[in-house]
Structure formats: C-alpha cells, structure tokens
Image 1 (spheres, rainbow, N blue to C red):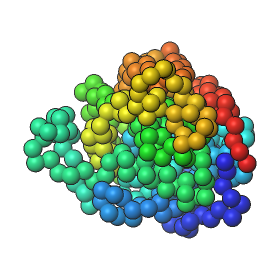
Image 2: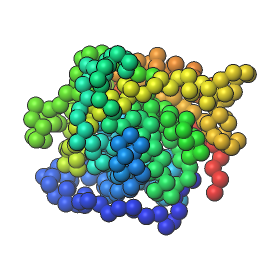
Image 3: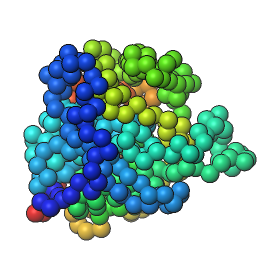
Image 4: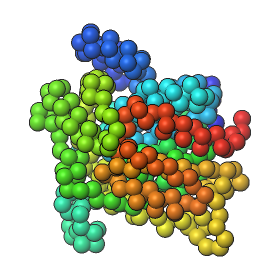
Length: 364
C-alpha cells in the first residue's frame, strides 16, 4: 500500500544534494551520474522518541518510484548508509511497480547520531551480559531501531509495506514483524540471522576499523574497498564503480562513529529464534505456514530468506536455521555470494524480493 498523494517531506533537507555534488570534481560527477543515475534528494522525518535514550529521532530517507505503488522498505546493516542499496538496484525494483524507500539507520549517515554516548567496549561485549559487571547501559537497542522503521512508515503515511532487511537490517526486520505485524505485507530476510554470530576476529576488527586518515577521501575509499572486497565472496568486485559510489557517499556524509553502538545493540539483542517460532508458527500443534502467522488479520504474509554461500560474516548455517524458525518460508542460497553484493546480483536478489512481494494480494 503506497503513501497518500498528500504525503509530506516531514522536514526540509539540511543541505541540498546539489551543494554537496559541487564538492566533487566535474569528471567524477559526470561519471557518477552516467553509471548510477540521478541520486534522490535527502529528506528527513521525525519518527518518534527513543525508548532507551528518551531523545527524539530524525531519520534521513530517499525514495524511488510512484508513492501510489505498494511500498518496499529497505533496511540496511551495520554502519551502512542509503548508498549500500545501490540506486540501480532501487530503480529496478521501482520499475517493477513498487515505491522504494531506503534510509540511514540512526547513528549513521545523516540520521540522528549518538556521539554524546561513549563507544562501548567491544571486548566486554564478548562476555554474556550477566558476566559484564559494570557495563554501561546501551545507547539504544535493536527494538528501538525497529521502532524507527515503523515510525518512518507512519511519518510517510504508509500503513503497510514489504519489509526487506539486510544483515543488521534483517534483524531489525524480524523485530518489526514480531512487534508490529500490522505494517508487514511481506518479509525478506537477507544475509542475516535469528541470533548473534560472532564473526572471525579478523572480520570483527575490520568491521570496527577505519581508514588511516579519516579526513582524506582517498584513504577512506582505500579502506572501504579493502573491507568490502573481503566481503564479496566469489563474486566479481567492481573496484572502480565501488569507489565512485563511495566517493559520493563520503561527500554526502562520512559519519560512521555509531558502528560500535550499533554492534552493541546487535550483541545484546536476545536471540529471536524462539520468538519467531512462537509468534510466526504459534509454537505448537500442526505446522502452520507463514500465511497468517505474522499478521493480525488473515492476510497472507510470505517470507523469503536470501543468503550467500560464501558469507564470511554470517555463515550460511544461520540462514538455514532462520528459515527453519519460520514454517512456510522460502530459503534461497546463492552459492558464490558473500556478505556484500555487487551489480551481478542485483536482478537475482531483486527478482526474489519482488516474487515474494507479489505473492500477497494488496488491497487498495
């Protein structure tokens, strides 16, 4: 169900994209436009007050397509901005008849930051919460981030949406389905888990590491290229296109200081497996498909789980377990894909999302 024709950009842009684009060399800007097309304008919405921190949250979002079409809401992962949902990917989905909304999670990009909260001690996070004596309260939880997601839909006058979550975004999507089933038309859980997989130490260090010179664009691009290339599995990694897209991302906003706080929210989130089984399958009795389990009405809510067979961050076993937690869900494994997906995967992933979304009837 799309937005009403009177939907409002709740807040004006803090600084127009045009001013930021002027910071790019003309040849870079021309190539950026030739490859990725025009970037949507950043818009801002107040989505509610955080339960944990008691502060008002503003989310930066972008849209593609006709707001009268059914909404597909894309939720990205740890320290990733809107740019990690590639504009070409978003436009393809929009061209198939969807209103695509992508956004910066809190504490990354242009959404509300929590810089006045200290970065958590990640070594302490490796301990169970009961053993981490003296641990400071979390700045926010994944449940808070799920509330941001629902608050954004409400701010845009969207009553129901096809919810797509990648990595941490998939964890948030699960919580949206568990706590706000009334907004979920369909659910796509991409490269994610029902629990908390600790990645290999080298991966964890890379996730929380940063460029040698954070204020130098090329240093930032070098770091991101190294890291995301290591996440690509056996798929081709397009270095030039990646650096070009990330150059614009850095100019738009290079704020990534919330990574540790987001990771802490992930680590301290209770395992969702049992809750998914209980809520989505009614726990006991004869097997129940996901057709009626998510929604408060008899609306069919299909679930698809997408994962890469070469994911170094969330091993493929987590996808298998997640699918087992949701009777009737569809599991699709892409054998060569890692935790990062480049343009060779765009159509394959998008078509699975669209197929899943189209399997539910949407009332006007």
